[in-house]
Structures are given as structure tokens and as C-alpha cells.
Amino acid sequence: MFVFWGDGSQEAMRLVESIRVRSTENFNWTFIFILAVVFYVYWTEFHNKNTEVLCAGLALYGVHWLYEIANAVIGHVFGYPLWSVSNASTTYILLIGVCWELSMMFSLAGMISFKMLPHDRSKRYFARDGKGGIDCRLVGALEMALLFALFESFLAGTSNHSFIWVYKWWGVLPVFITTYVPFFLASNYVPDMEPKKRRAFLIGEWGLVALLLIVLIPLGII
Image 1 (cartoon, rainbow, N blue to C red):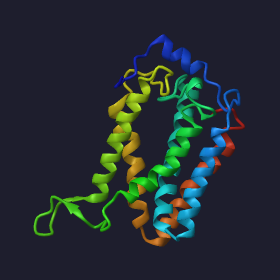
Image 2: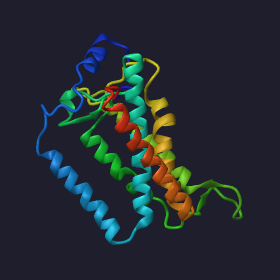
Image 3: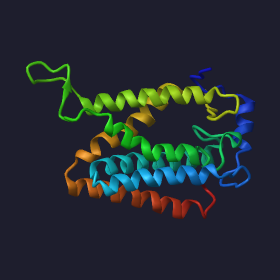
């Protein structure tokens, strides 16, 4: 079953209010297995000196964390976040909108998107005589964003409420445009930046993530 918009129901509000962030009540060993898989993937790419692939993964994952922090802040200020995950759907909730399994998936999503691009990333679709056309990296980002938005709509309709949308104006379309498109633009474009700009982007991005977590978690905001 697919759900395309939040319903503003009392049940959705109740589910969000019952979320236990960073509780170990549902913790199990799949947490360790998933961590091992992610570590193996990153170490393999590092060992093979696939710098661009690593940058793609880290670029998207950093954007993911900035969005999750912003979503948690929205929940703190307005009572409900834009999206949430339920206690029943995960072994561990990191922030109100993201669980361990989902976050680890996003740590790999940028790599996957980047590897799915054509070998020649200067390729342009629908170009005529080498002019015009659409950048293959943009097309790839839009395709991945649409896929992820549709899959999120499936998760929002699962019986264990894997995803919870409270606001009636929040759903597949805003998720696609405002969330997933920026995610995959980061993974598809950052690796092709000049090395100095790429390094500055990643350091600034992850430095901001670290700062926000260090400040906002102890304050009880996220």
C-alpha cells in the first residue's frame, strides 16, 4: 500500500509522541552486522583509492544528517517533525526521523548513485550535434530521488508505520523535491569538484554536522 500524503490523524500524532529516541529497548545484533557491512564497503573503496566514490558517499550522507537534524529541530519547535520513524520498525532510533538501518542505508546511497552514472560523466542526454541536452548527473539524481520518494511512500503505508507523516501538506512530492533531489545532487556533483573545493565542501559539511550534534543533543533539542 502506498501513502502519498500525511493524514493529520490522531493515530499519527500518537505514534510520534510515543517515539523513544536513542532507547535500547529494541536493540539487537543486526545493528553490529549492518555496521560491519558499511565499514567493509568504505574500507574497500578506500583501499582501492576510489576517492570519488568515497566523496559521493560522504557528500550525500552529510546532507542526510543536516536534514535529519533540521527535521528534529522542527519537531522540537512545532510539536511534530516532517517525518518520523516508529519504535516498532527499528532496533535503534538516532533522531526522531531516522533509525539506524535507514541511516546506514543513506551512508551507502551516494556511492550507489555515483556508480550508476555513465562512465563518461560529461555525457548529456538529448544533445544535438554535441550541444544542449541534459547533464547525465542531473538525470541520475532525479531518477534516484523519484525512486526513493516512491519507496518512502510505500514505507509510510506499512502496517508497522515505518515512516510517519503527520502534516497533511507533507508527502511524496515535497519529499522528492526538497529532500531527495538535493541528496543525490550532492552525491553526483561533489566528486567532480576541484579537489580543494571538494575538500572544503566535505570539511564544512561534516564540521557543521558535528557542531550541531554536540550542541543540540545535550540541550535536549534533538
